[in-house]
Image (cartoon, rainbow, N blue to C red; front, side, top):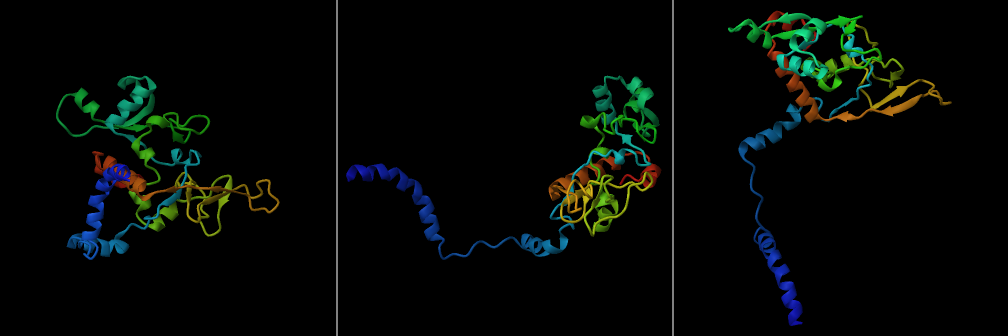
Amino acid sequence: MAQRSLLLLPFLLLLLPFTSHSLSNNNSQPPKKPLLRQIRSALAPFTLPWYEQGLHFSCTSCGKCCKVDGDVWLAPEETVRIARYLGYDAGEFRREYVRAEVVPDVGGSGEDKEALSWLCLKRREGACIFLDALGKCSIYDVRPIQCETYPFWPSIVATRGDWEDEAVVPEEGVLREGTSDRYWTAELGGCEGILLDGGQHVKGMDGGNNDGEGVKVEVPIVHREEIVAKMKAAKKHWKRFPVEDIKQSTWYL
């Protein structure tokens, strides 16, 4: 018996702090939150973004966002990254892929200014020059921030109405009843990966089924944290652009 007690002693000693703490605080009230935290908690239901529960979106690799009537501008570091990915030096990259350049109004030599320039990509047959014959981005792994953050730009996620306006009917199916009935155009753009109702696409109205309802495909939820991160990245990126007139006239942000 004594031996058993000795064996149990280390475990009892380990439990002692937790036991004494729970006993000593058994009748005490939990500490009050600081006043500022209380105010934030009270206001939370009224200040949370409309997309607090996330948004249904999954890229369908349709390539339509690469065919919109608009420009893609590369920040200096993006130019370096993409040129290196393609195996070009700066001059070769400009000749092959760039149609316009914005040089910031800073001092220094021509080479210094060139290294800080923002470059506008060429278009080919109504699409981004990097859209390949299969309708895929040929530089996807190093694509620009402008492309990487779409469709979570501040202008698109500002309100529920803006988000709904960006949704378009997929080319090979229809959205569920009660969702967008708008089709994509090069002028107005739009994203077929956005789903507004219930998280399912319907692909092919017959889809090989006898019920005529097609094949339902689940569309995952993008959580609030990722949405906010992409919005901030897009906004921070575009705020750096040096020409205000282009900022105001572009469809980006």
